[in-house]
Length: 451
Image 1 (cartoon, rainbow, N blue to C red):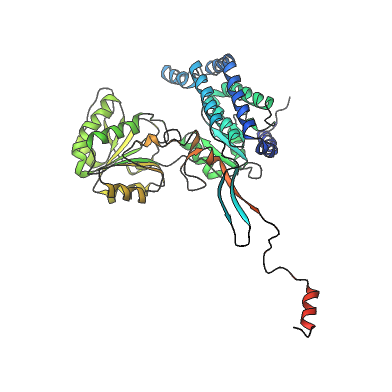
Image 2: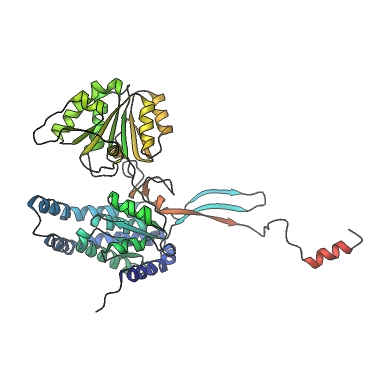
């Protein structure tokens, strides 16, 4: 059997998804809740199928890889029963979230008596391009359905069989509970060209969310003709002011870098006011090196202050280059720079902005407020870890990634962020003045002696 070319295949999926948008938008909130609940229940019941598919993904790891590479791949790809239960619980939490569609954010009465409302509505077809495993596939489908959108999702190729099996369970269950065909679509062709084709179909795809490494985000931002809703690039800085509490600063830096070093909101660069550097850095850097084996990259002041801290089996501190300050790391690597004052710290953040998440550690209110006003970032925090920039941590609800670009909504992509607004107006015959008058009537008026 001849395989359909990837471009035509993806176009067909996207058109079928677009055809389902009206039917999904017309589903009641209760209908979507019932479908999501059933999806969670069926996924839990299909546990063995998902784990069996994951075993096939594990068996597909090349045996010729080196021991370390093979071990890391298995650790990354392995999906356990606990992981599946976490996905089930996640879907149930999304089902319990308030439905944002139909919400009226503003309403007013014009002088002409027109009742005007701003009403929240679904965006339409949202394409999620992921390099991750089944949790992101399930999250994407559930978040889109809850917000009245249609989802087209492509998962990470390392989990292809796992993602396919999970998506099949969720899609079939949803369709059995009134969700139209095409509303939850899984792209079961891992070709990279298929990813790019999704970002070009602006007539049938209304938003794209890249979920992956910097290379994926870069290519989507550069080549997409579809609005990018969830660009989670940008750097994360921690600035420690001269008036900071040293133990507090240490805790925030360690948590911002170590809690999940691969997260997009993990710290990339630590900026330290020179007045507090000698109090803070020696103890902090020893902790980062010896307790957490972080690769440290420092400015000349940092390197000269600390010297080369030779640690067994670790690289110590390396002198930074200009290129190092612009790197989004998502790894156990941290850049450290001593700055002369707040102005220099703000200038450094601005030079590599707009940012993802930036935080300041200080006791001074005026310093904190200046930092908040001047930093251009998806989220700006005061005396808190950068890792708190997420929907769940900010009590905003579940999220489908983070958006740090200026377009649409910045910050966590919550259910409300997956909607847009339209104006609805109710009248009783109001007209735009001056109202048109037929030309013959105007000519008669001109000839009449009464005028």
